[in-house]
Length: 110
Image 1 (cartoon, rainbow, N blue to C red):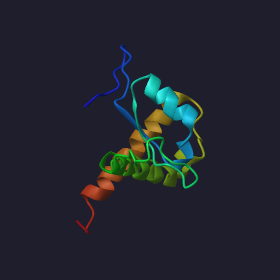
Image 2 (cartoon, rainbow, N blue to C red):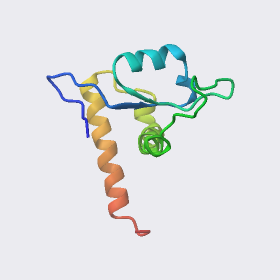
Image 3 (cartoon, rainbow, N blue to C red):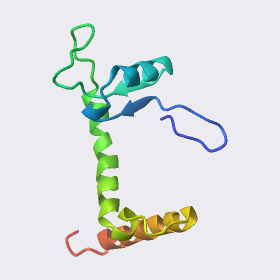
Image 4 (cartoon, one colour):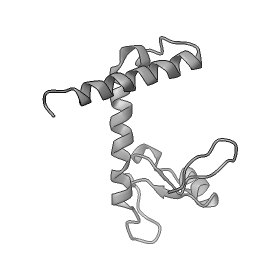
């Protein structure tokens, strides 16, 4: 798996986005940089070669990120960006994840 490293810049193998990112300029930029575009086409667009070139399995992995971001937005302090300094904001993200982990770990539903 290709990961983003600190210190040396690496490019992702693929970028997943929703239909709002389905524009020729975005697809061209990704193609020019050898990055696979995992973006479904809008209803008013047709693929260039007549086929639907879309990796559904890879797109489904995007839901994990979407759910995580959605959960973080439920934390009011994070969604309103109450903390202005980046170091404090990152600390609050860590606290939110610890709270989430403890809630899941000690839940009576598990």
